[in-house]
Length: 301
Ligand code: AMP
Image (cartoon, rainbow, N blue to C red; front, top):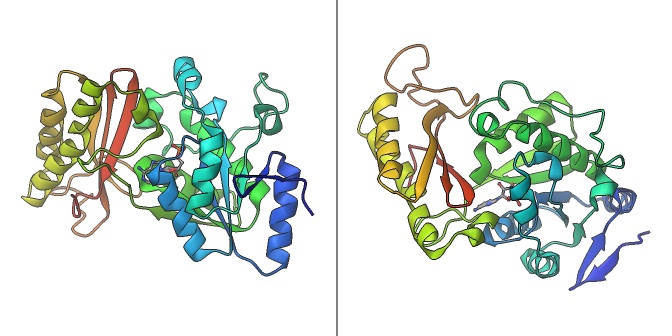
């Protein structure tokens, strides 16, 4: 069936109709579809998602789309790395069979006029990243809803690296009855602990060295948590690590319930989660780049 072309051994579809038709044919042949959504500039973190999809599914599609509606900062959108050619190769090497690389007009036919229909995930989308990046999660939820509805029934793989996004995608799939299974995958890190991110390439050598304080902040929070600290103690241990680093400007360092992302206190009150899932979240500005990271305080580093 397809009008997809092949580049670096990977089929490339640029229209939603092509993608949908091709994946329908795969499902008719009894194949399980795996899907990984990305904005490109692929690194080992993305590759781990693609490899997991390839291990668990018969056909793997990777979308590469720098979604303009999720960028609160126009400079961030302009400077976002775009490396389609090497991405096709990296996607193929990691196990992708097909890349979906639509244009902005393919995804938003009225662009730059805003679409009339958007998706808002209330409450989960309002806090943390949502506070500092207004509209960000509406853009994310809308494009994820669109891409997954074009793809159809599939298993879709998201990184824990973007933990709030992962939580929102779980909620979105449930609330919109999308025929997808959402799978969360562990964060891939550099040897010194920095979480891989497409934005890391924009850090100067000094900023790159300073950025390691985000994972150290998580380690300090996890240690404070495991030695019985309450929320204030955990969060101040986290903040102290980042605040000691002059090149890094802390936005938040928080201990939250991993399900609803509300602040959680492990020692008191109604939210007393002796085995309830918890998460440490951190966000900071490092030079021109906003970085985020998170971990399970019971299992880090
Ligand atoms: P992005 O291209 O940044 O939108 O990310 C696409 C997908 O890759 C999302 O599900 C991210 O959470 C995931 N991802 C990004 N960085 C990492 C990482 N270091 N480890 C694992 N997954 C990641």
